[in-house]
Length: 102
Image (tube, rainbow, N blue to C red):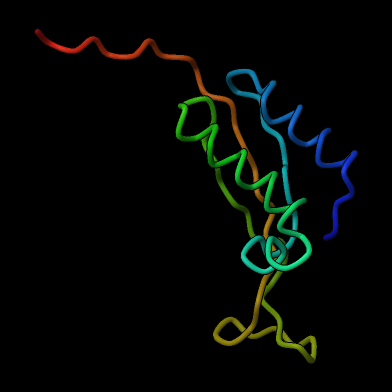
C-alpha cells in the first residue's frame, strides 16, 4: 500500500488523537515489506509514530491476519504461504507516572 502525504497526515492525526478504548487501523498489508524503499517516508513514518506512542504509553499495537496464508501462485499454504495483516492501534487509559522513591 502506498500512501500519499495527505494520507500520512490524516493517519498521524488519528493516531495521536486516540482516546482510551478507541482503535485505528493504521496499515493493511505487510508492514515489514511495505515500510521499506520509497515508502519509508510514508508508511515508515506512520509506523514509527505508532511505535513512539507505545513508548509514551498512549497506545497498544496489535496485528490481525487478513485471510489465509497463500503462495505466490495463490494456493493456501500454512507453512510456506504469506499473509497480509491489519495493524491496529488502541488507545489506553492514561496513567500518572510512578513517583521515584527517595
